[in-house]
Image (tube, rainbow, N blue to C red; front, side, top):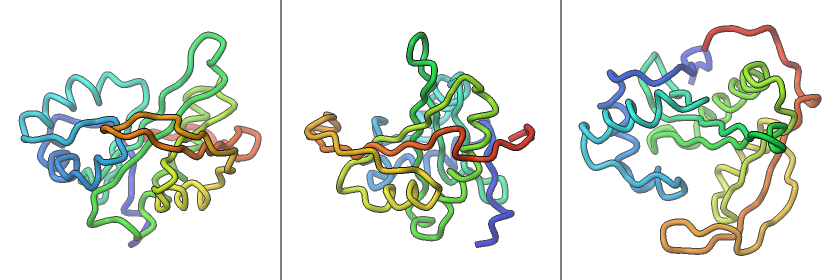
Amino acid sequence: MDPSRITLRGFRPTDADDLFSWAGDDRVTRSLRWKTLTSNQEALTFIKEVCMPHPWRRSICIDDRSIGFISVFPGSGDDRCRADIGYAIAVEFWGKGIASKAVEMAIPQVFRDFPEIVRLQAHVAVENKASQRVLEKTGFSKDGLLRKYSYLKGRIHDLIVYSILSPEIEVLPSHSC
């Protein structure tokens, strides 16, 4: 995959069909807090009501076609120094380095967009080896194991916490996503 074909941008209503194609797949949503989408109309509503107003949610695109997402949840108040990141991509693109490239692209943008953030962190289920590999490839450090930490889709999960700190990356001048 030519990495120059991968871009991050805000979601648009015209992404509804593409969003439904991957967010309607239980394999993609099994590690997400989202429920699996069941229709194009539900995808359109999700874009308008959840994606577009989100403080930092980007569509991962190949040739401007949405194939996944990256979301960052900045903390507030005393937690404004940190943010959580999450991502997913369509099954057909698993194992091709696309998620890693997208996360790599997002990291400096997040630190530019939220200069008060010092720590970007991710919580990953122990069994989600692919997501752990994405984080490791993009410079995140494994901080530790949180035993029986999160209830997701009917099960309690052990999570691994990963982080990257702003001084650990080179933040380049802002470019539009």
